[in-house]
Structure formats: structure tokens, C-alpha cells
Amino acid sequence: MAEIGKIWQGEKTVRLDKKDKKILFLLMNDARVTISKISKKVELSKSNVSRRILKFEKIGLISGYNAYIDVSKLGIESHLILIKLKSSQKNKEDFSIKIANIKNVYSVAVIVGEYDLAIGIYSKDEEKRNKVLDEILSNPIVNDFKISKIKTIFPHLNYTGEMFNHSTKKIDSFANSLLEIDKLDENILSALSEKCRISSVELSERLKVPRATLNYRINNLIESGVIAKFQPNINFFMLGVEFYFLRFRLSLPSKTRDLIGYLSETHRANTILKSEGSYQVMAFLQFKDNTEFRKFEEDLLNRFGEAISDYLFGVAKSQYKLNWFPKILSAK
Image 1 (cartoon, rainbow, N blue to C red):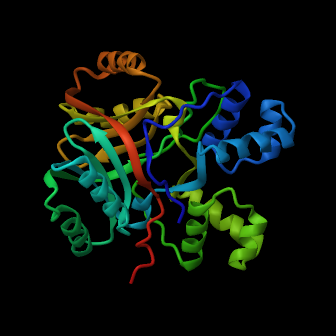
Image 2 (cartoon, helix red, strand yellow):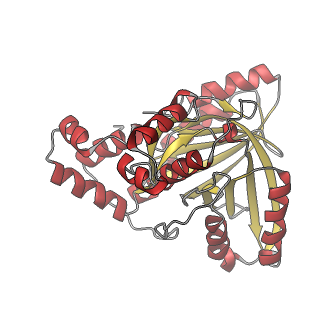
């Protein structure tokens, strides 16, 4: 599966013109959008659009195009592990790389704040989950940790430094219905997670199924919420943005839905986590700088100050892994 290798805040910032930003915006809204549709939206030739996208890929701004999968629809659990580390920076980096190579781990982010790492894991049952936790937490470099069962919500991330008119499907972040899938569905999810811009013709030939069947299955996976969105793997650090990891403890739990809706509508959140832990809502949001973050913070507290009893934030510095496809799906 395609996944993000290490990306970090010190990487070179790239300059985008208005057309570049709009192309990137359209890809972020739906990574399967055709070159033809992009061409009409941005009023450029198809060859010009293709050259610009190729430039994004060549400089490392885009490293792939993936399906974001809501594993809760497949009966798979997600947990977030926040870890405080000790020892040297070199040992911390070696530990992060080692964790990123574990099959059940889908995300490893380095943050600065109360904790050093935010690690996401998938599991089918308690026994397998505990084995993964043992593998991660038994390392002597671990100083402290916190584990929370989470449901991940995938709002559309439309922040490119500039907003454009758009329409996006409203997400139902609280729906819990499961979908029974078969081997063909698994193969489709695997292929789209690796390269969601693959054409229906090519995917039909690869999987040896009629296009009509393929399109029906993909639409079913989208409508059921298993596929939450199609989005490029973008190195946002290269756009000069800062990542903030926010955690909210609510004194009014009835406001959970409203807070998640608010965070979704900012268009700055790539993922929002609904947690069963003491901090009921967590989110990764992106801002141009601390000034923009503080403006957001002021508005947030004006709206939800009475509902939030505590909130903490850290700054994300690098990402060692991000791969939403559950490799444990077909595990025996």
C-alpha cells in the first residue's frame, strides 16, 4: 500500500500561483476528479493541468492519491496511543521508524507538547490489539502513555491558503452501521488506497471484473461510508502551514456533535477523532501561522467556552506513516 514516508516541518516551502492552488483544491476535494473537469474549472488546457500536477508530484508536494477508509464500518476498531518518550533524539527517531513498520499501525506523527508521538492502530479483537500494544509499549524508551478508543471522522480538507466555491457531501460522523464486504470489495479498497486516480478501465482489467460491476461496488462503498473521501497524500509542510493537534474535554457532552460539526466546517481539519477517553474530541488542524491559529482559538472559545472544561494542543513536527487501508483486513 502507498503510505507517507517521513515528512517534516523543515522541508522547503513551495510557492503556488492561483491556478496551482485551485488545482490542488479540486484534487483535495475529490482526488478522482478528471483532468477534463479540472481543466474546465480552472480555465486551463488539459495538457497545462497535467504538467502542473506532474510538477506537484515531482517536487514531492503530492506523493500519492488514496482512499480514506472508515474502518468502523467494517467492524475494525481504532485506538490512538499518545506516548511520552525519553532518551536521545536519535533513539526517538529509530523508535518511530520501528513503530511505523508494524502492520497494525496506520499512523505515526511526531508532536511537541505533553506527548511526543501520536500513534494510530487498527485491531479486530482485544487479544491482537494487546499484542500490538505490548510490542509498542514494552520498549524502554517509553516514559508514559495514554490509550483511547476512537472513531475517525474525515471532513473535506479544503485549505490551500485560499478558499473556492465548492459543494461537499455532508458527513454523518455518528452513524454506526456496518457493511459486509467480500474479497472483491477488499481488492477494490486495496487498489484505491494505493492509487485512487486509477481509471475504471485499468482497475477493471486488473481485477478482472466488468466495469459496471466495479462501478457499482465503488459507489456502494462510498454510499455506505466505508470510503470517506479520496484525497492526495500532500506534504502540507511544503505549503508553509503549521499542524496543531487539539484535545477537548467537554463538561457538556451533548455538545460533542456541535463541536465536531464546527471543526469539520473550518476546512482545516483532515481528521477529527471522537474518543471514548477523558478528552472526547481530538483533531489535527492546519493553519498558516500562530496568528491564524489564535484567531481560530478565540472564535472556538466564544462558541464553545461553556461546553469545554479543558483543552490542550501540541504542534505536529513530522509524519512517519499515514495509510488508511487496514492491512489486517484479510489477516487470518
